[in-house]
Image 1 (tube, rainbow, N blue to C red):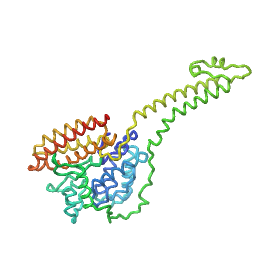
Image 2 (cartoon, rainbow, N blue to C red):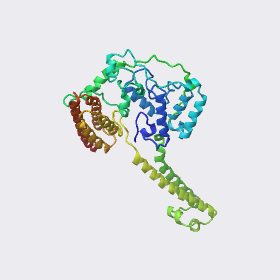
Image 3 (spheres, one colour):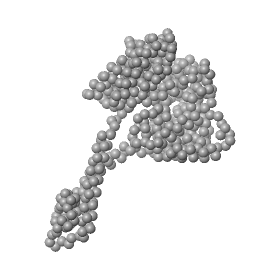
Image 4 (cartoon, rainbow, N blue to C red):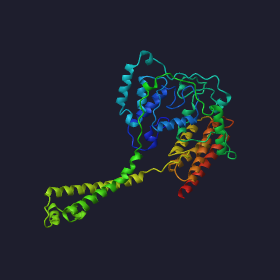
Length: 437
C-alpha cells in the first residue's frame, strides 16, 4: 500500500478489496474538493474555524468509512455534485477519466456566468483575535491560514502550512510534539497529558461553530448508499466445500443406490464408460434409464469434483491472505512508521546552512530498518505498547526538526534526534523479541 493519506482512496488504504484506475480519479476529486472548500479536506471543521490534528484524524477516518461529505463551500451547485461523485464509494464513482471529464463539461454548461467567474481558494483572511495560547498551539502561526493559500503570500511570510508539512500525520494518532527533548527528560506519558490540556485550553471541550451556510441540503446531498464489507460474506467461501460434499453424498451415495439398488465408487463414475456403469447397475426386475442419463450423472460428478477442488483452493487462499486484526489502541498501523520516518528524513534533507549530518544519517538508517519490518498495529498488548512508544519518539523527532533551522539550537537538536533514533532502534529490537513470544 502506497499513497498520501490526505488524498488516498479508502480501498487502497484499507486493503479489503482489489482496486483499479478509479483510485486516481478519487484522489483528483479530493484535490478539486480542497480547491473549492477553502483548502480543507472533506469532513474538516468548516472554514474559518480552527482545527487540530485530532480533527484531521477524525476527517480521515470518516473518509475511510466511505461516508459522504457535504458539498464544498465554494461549489454549492452542479460543479460540487460532480466533484462529490468522484469521491464516492467505488460503486458510485466515475468509471473512467472520460466520464469524469464529460460530467465537468456538462456542469460548465449549466453554471451561470457569475459562478464560472467566481474566484476560489483566494488568500484566507487572517484572524485578528487569536490568543497567544492559540498561536503557540498552532505552531506559532497567528492566523487561520490553511493549505494552499501560501501561494499568495510574500517571501517574508510563513508559507508552509502544518498539514502540508506533515502529510503522514493522519496515518495514526501520535503523541504531542515537544520542541526540546533531551535523553534524560523525555516522558511520552507526561507529553500526552500536556497535549490534552493544551488542546482543551485552545479549542474548548466540544465547542461548536456559529458559522452556517444556507443551502437546501435535501436538494444537493446525494442519497447515502450503505457500504457492504466483503468480509461479511467470507463465511460463504468457507462453507462452499461442505455444501458441495453434501450434494455429492446425497446424489451418489443416496439417490443412485436407492434408485438402482447398488452403489458405484467415485472412481468408476469418473473413469468408467456408460456401458460398464449400466452393466454394473443391471439388476433383475429393474428397468434401466437411457444411456444419456448415465452420461448426465457422469457430467454432474465431474462438475462437483472440480468445484470441490476449486473451493478448497479458495479456502486456502483466504486463510493465507487473512490479515490480522488491527488493535484499536495502536498509534501506528501497517507501514505508517516507515512512511513517517521517510517524511521526516525528507524534511531534514531540505534544511540548509546547518550541520544536520548526524540527524540525516540516523533517520536514513532507521528508514532502512523500518522498510523490512512487519506491519504495525497487530499483536499482543506488550507489542502494541512497544509500538506506541515508537510513535511517541517519532512525534518527538517531528517536534525537534524545527530546531535544526536555528544556529543556536541546531547542534543540540541534531544530537536529540540521534538519541531518539537510537531509542527507536532499541524498541524495534524489543518488538522483534515480543513478536517471537
